[in-house]
Image (cartoon, rainbow, N blue to C red; front, side):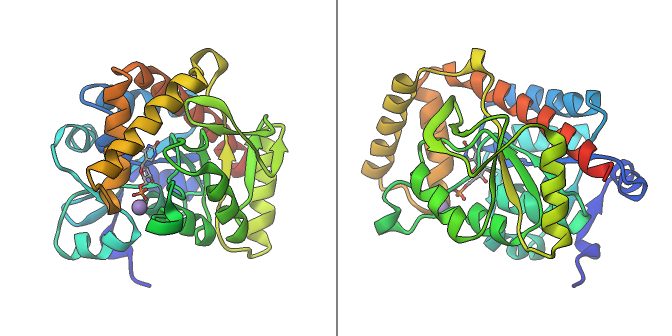
Length: 305
Ligand code: PSU
Ligand code: MN
């Protein structure tokens, strides 16, 4: 392995790694493809502030000019938020983009890869990718799930959007041996809603318990990561029926327009935004902040082990 020459880690994060300080990885696809400008840049700064206020160091990831970036400065954050047509890099895209000196946002899968290369074990996001509805025919299953099977990072998320088949996503994770831990909940959350109707595998009472499971899993040499499912705060939780109707409509339009491949998830995210008139954005921001808070606590508990 010779990834050092491709990896660009900020001095602050290098130092935090050496000192064993808590660090929280953040993705950039949520910025470039998940939220509009300028809300995304406000979010990008605020989520980092929240992590710092919790005593951890934020590490937002991206591919910029053919480099794997671990930690972005203000200009780099602005670039990922403002530029139109930023590419989206999942695992299969990474070598191509690096070889060509390109710039791309990192998905959950690639953010996990970068975190692992740098030695960062905790990652906060909004929602993970998963098994798409109709995957029985399309075979559209996010590379995020394979990454969770192989890469040793704990991903704190508010579950996943019901643009996916949540039941099949959980089945896939079981097959791949990925633990799904509920953070102070027994219910697997559905992004905008506190529960999806599905259960998590195990309920954890606090960050300490999650950190202990992480340590145990990796000391045993068990490959792969885990999901820490953290529900949206109750006051921001959206009406099931309202959001389900919108998501159904978005999925139907995507099908009618023949959207497929890596365009599917960004298309659905943009459609949902359009159809809810931006109402869903406030919930999206709050659940991601909440995940950053919990991830910081887990990173601190893990660093103390
Ligand atoms: N789901 C969301 N918001 C997102 C994503 C998914 O609710 O921003 C992004 C994440 O970066 C995730 C990616 O890793 O989409 C999954 O894309 P795909 O389904 O093409 O693997
Ligand atoms: Mn896909």
